[in-house]
Length: 240
Ligand code: GLP
Image (cartoon, rainbow, N blue to C red; front, top):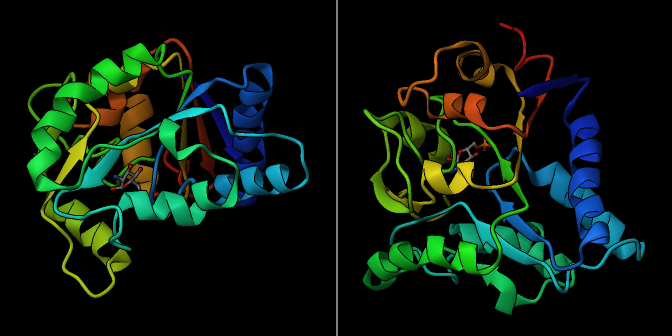
């Protein structure tokens, strides 16, 4: 696990966007795994800027997002699909046919979980998976548990996640369930780049990097991956 401590979120976003953009320049058909939440937003801004300057095109890229709330359709402004449209997809030349999401539609959720890992492998696997980390050490929506998951599944969100994420909800109560890629799906990505900023992440960051590998801190599993870069600001790195 390579750990890079940067001055601030802006400096992190410059490096992480370069990693993603360079991958797309090297292989325009790259497969990218995207995350939502506040952590990747600055990185997405740098990617949009590079697109606007004509430095990169995302039109042949295939994407897989980590997770989605149960019960929220693509048209719901609280959904992660909507978030990706607002913060990246709608502002670059992404081909929506190549965008993959776990379905927030309850009637489709089981099928979409069953098919997602297969879709990832049919696309050739994920080249780079972008991650954030929850204050409780979750990645995607893999909450602290007794064992590491493999494929996508429906998860009941913990009260800690509900209290961290409720602030993002507009006109609606945050769902208590979500669909998420499993730990196995995340670990099969060839490269993983994780961003954590702010003091609130310091404890989870410490456990991820220095703690034992345990499903009680899902992000600790990344210690077992051979190509992970963790980008931290000074606040999130303060316990290291
Ligand atoms: C959310 C998402 C994760 C995200 C994490 C951190 O619950 N499911 O994918 O990485 O929590 O969010 P933030 O970046 O807003 O702190």
